[in-house]
Length: 388
Ligand SMILES: Cc1cc2nc3c(=O)[nH]c(=O)nc-3n(C[C@H](O)[C@H](O)[C@H](O)COP(=O)(O)OP(=O)(O)OC[C@H]3O[C@@H](n4cnc5c(N)ncnc54)[C@H](O)[C@@H]3O)c2cc1C
Image (cartoon, rainbow, N blue to C red):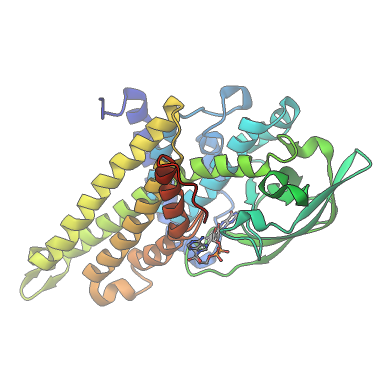
């Protein structure tokens, strides 16, 4: 068993940390207030290879292994959870899904511009009546004369909605076939009948734009079907496995940032004649948070290692996401308490983290759904097939 990062992973970690510290951390507050990423940020991230992180060199990517990719998201989330989420959706949910399932034509058309950041990706699965229950999709796609699919419906919560050029849209092609009747489509922003609608104002992650999408007789060429007809749910669930791992790395970086902010404050803030860090109650907040972060770190890296070795990791990704989102939220909560009244002020970063991290227990499958996935996997070994 080798717990050490290899030389290349350590080199990447340093490079990510340097870039994020210099270029992203100073913008985090502005991103939250302006509710968007500054225009120059994604092109700069693309120059570093962050937008082609999971793509092979053939498509101008940097082909990070899953551990290195988690190191990237961890560092990004240490500075700004909105930026980490934006980049994670683009890479893990969209470009990797096209890489894993696309035809040669789809890959050569979409992946290089995605690696260069010329095209940003968005993942559109959720609908008003289909959240945790993705089999309840109402968006329909029917074939029209063999050349086009015609899509009709509405999607909600499409992250990167406002800034994306390429949308992975999941729609029902065979209503009789249930879970096997869903298909995945690559929809370009300027396709007639496709409209990016309302942007959700949110509690946190305000730099991540989440939009409603409308598909109104939207004609998508047959060559934009991703995978085979009926494979949509399988494609979405595989993408979600990887993005739950990604999200756990975001939780890790976020929790670490909260701890660092809390420790710094505790050392500087004086009450009763000395730093509050000298009080055992404050030390307990720090120690408990640090212990949870270290436990999470091994969970995240181990799950990434499973993904790198090609082992199944659905249960592990759900465990990492479940634990990660709860650790990040507890870290923000405890470190806000360490800040006292200052933690409730917008001026302090912990206030933003508290709002940002709350979303992590909901996005990409709620904690309740992660528990279902974990229990289903365990009970399957006992011959029980449980339903959500
Ligand atoms: C910031 C943010 C970004 C997002 N980005 C995207 C995106 O890019 N693409 C996308 O497609 N979606 C996205 N989503 C949507 C997200 O995936 C859904 O919000 C999530 O899956 C839950 O669905 P819901 O909101 O409809 O809640 P519901 O499914 O209605 O759930 C409501 C409550 O009931 C619980 N519940 C539901 N079913 C069960 C069950 N069987 N057992 C126990 N409890 C249950 C849930 O856990 C929850 O507590 C995003 C959401 C957020 C908040």
